Image (cartoon, rainbow, N blue to C red; front, top):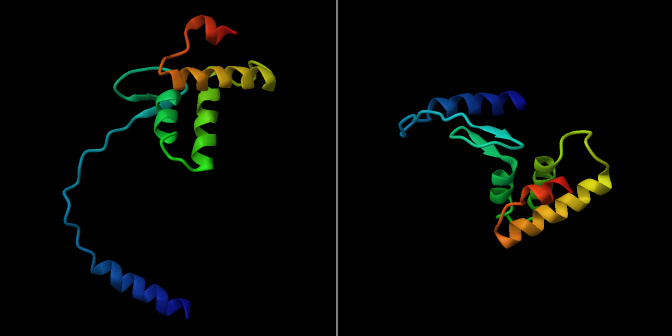
Length: 104
């Protein structure tokens, strides 16, 4: 049974016609912080992910915000939660956290 399905797939793949031109790929780096033509920060990525209303996207956006604010092993979970709430509040106000907020 599986063999027939695989043969059909092979025959089907031979009938595919590529009609679009290939485009040049652009490699970007998703990093906790930074800027530049080839860097997407976690905050920028979180802004895009947050546009999706499903719970997984919303939670992932919060995590991206957390990861942008704190380095691995830097602070306790409670400290991360406080900073994450500040980050989310700053996002909804439409501004970036200033350096005094980031250090709290």
